[in-house]
Amino acid sequence: MPKERADAQPWEAALKRAIKTQHKWGYSVRPMRGKVQVERYWKDTGKRQAATLPIEWRRGCEREVLNALHGINAAIAKGLSLKDAVRLTFDLTAGLKVQTNWREIYSRFYDFKVPAKVKETTWEKEYAPRLLWLIDVLTGADAPNNAELALAAMRAGRNGQGDAPGSRSRKLRIQYAVQMLRFAVSKCGASGRWLPPDEDTIRDLIGEPAPNSSKASQSGQALALSDEQFLRLFDSIANARWKLAVGLIGVFGLRGVELKYATAHRDHLHVNYGKRTAKGSTEARDIPILDPAGRAGLGQQLLMTLSSGITELPPLGSTDKAASGAIDTFLRRNDVWMEYKADAKAMGQRVSLYSLRHCFADRCAMATPPIPPKAAAVAMGHSLQVHLQTYQRQHSLKLVKEAFEISNTSKVAI
Image (tube, rainbow, N blue to C red):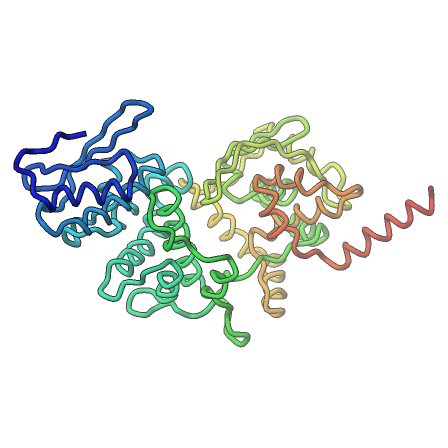
């Protein structure tokens, strides 16, 4: 601990007593070139760290110093160094006063997300504009003082735009804000008042679209094609290269981009693609054959065609993002596909490339015996939670009825 100076003032002794009262051990302060220098000592390891605060060493600085140490101590408890904790406690761009440094938290959140969880391009396009708006909200003249109020302010974007309940823009603004606020508390030692509220409150803040509102062309879950519909589409394709591409997607439940990472083996398709999301990344996987009802042997035929190299896959663009666009462009020239899209639209629903992936998920669920959801999720390259919430929320009533009939027939035979 720094030695007492001979010319120390009474207020300095009072400041040190106040620090000792709030923090029983570990912290000490002293003047350093007119500023407050704080030292943190760990008795169990004998380690010391020191950093200078942007606070003048003067009579009346006690409240600022104690407030700063409160934030610094919370950040250190999350594993940060003293100097990092100081940076998170002072936003120098907003003046030399103690307040959460949201710009520093934003920078650390970026390092946490990119590239381990999301791609740089995704961050720049989706995260950055929304989180920079959140920082403006948190540092503005009428800044909220807790997470729920901050999320309420994020219901509308800059200039009051995109505030329709349930809209994609409003949903993403609030969801990304929730992620960064949770990170601020759990990883950076921000005050607990910045911890987002429960999920029900978050859903209420996002809201639901009005019953009579028109949906965006890509809103809502894509309908699953039945095996019968998939085979009709497959048989309607004359181009051998595109027939192979669409066949692989429908039989093995691929994402469009995964065609670029697929290799055929004797009894399975190997996909070496890593999809990164906020919830984790997809690992390389093997997808066993599960033929569509009424077309036994199709999976083996597609694997042999792909492995032989005689028929190549069609051009899918120079980037991963372009692959799905290329497939969608081709399908829009197919009369059967456009018929499916028109029928879905007439029912207020939609068909997209993911309808082929949903087709595979339904095939797994309705197989005899059914593929366990966990096994199907692994084959499709996503979590069990995503599989149950997105890919098995609804099934064709016809297929459900057929599955029960088959089960009952088997019991009678036994």
